[in-house]
Image 1 (cartoon, one colour):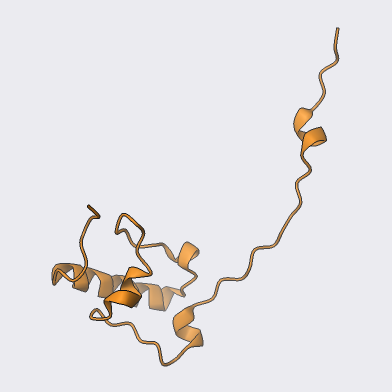
Image 2: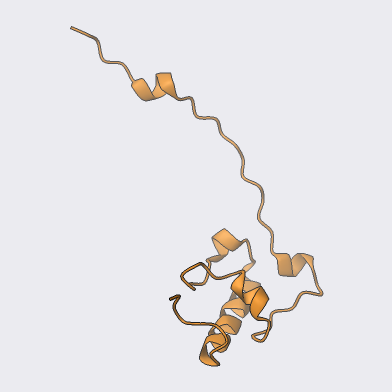
Length: 86
């Protein structure tokens, strides 16, 4: 009878790779401002289904994520950005 071994440990060895530090692009570039009329900037923080990307994925700080969320919601109310993707 064949002896069972831990196949995962033999086949794959996991190597820890530290992820690149995410940074708030609004804190690093003071000229960049959050405005509900700047649709191209707001779209970069929306998923393909028009959902707001969370700050752990986007790398924004809490302050700018709140401002960004508020601007996206204002743009949605004014019909500049769709609520859902088609």
